[in-house]
Length: 256
Image 1 (tube, helix red, strand yellow):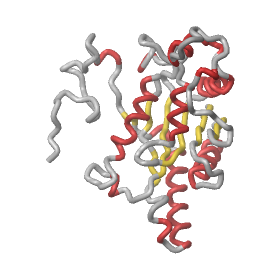
Image 2 (cartoon, helix red, strand yellow; image 1 turned 90 degrees about the vertical axis):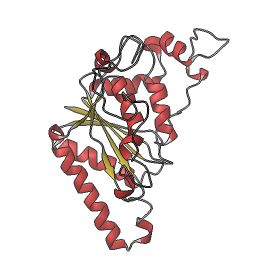
Image 3 (cartoon, rainbow, N blue to C red; image 1 turned 135 degrees about the vertical axis):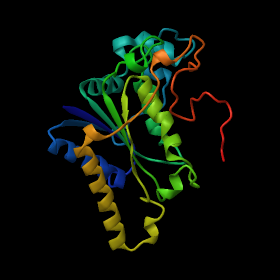
Image 4 (cartoon, rainbow, N blue to C red; image 1 turned 120 degrees about the horizontal axis):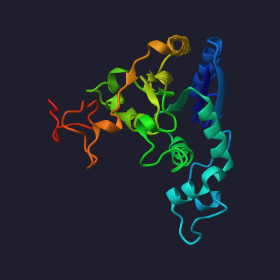
């Protein structure tokens, strides 16, 4: 069994970096072989740009999708290496903090560049027929405040909706999405706590992560619709199930 961890945090001594190391150790203790990419320390450029491509399909105008497909196996070296790691791994773990209700920009850039058009997905190669079909992905995310604030009626917003775009991106290229691991209260409330309370709370989070990794087979999946649930017009079929407020049968939601 092989796993690949992608870390998106600029501080090597951060709690996110610590969780990435703990994930590696916990998986290795269960017999996994683990590779990892630290996007910041590797110097990864998150911006897709013409300079990444030597043999251009059109030197006069940069079209990212066209150049990605034209590059084929000659994609930029970082992308080629990262795709090899993803191909080898049965499990992908993304470790990152929520910043302004979204992942850090460097992780968005990882999706933009690594999930290359043609090599990773096409109109006929997505969802259950995607490049990473039958592989699993897990989001491991830190947030600043309590779990209550991230419930459906919390002031921070529904965490399941905030994570959906990243999960959907992974599902689009074939991954089965494991229920996320969310570390609550890591930043905002800690600076107002005494050191002993901080240590105890962070250790409890780490132990919860370790425990979950020991029982990955029992972790539920976040459901997504397969291609057969969509009509020719791109809309969900009337008889198909819906799993998220992002894709639904009714236009207007009952918010009461």
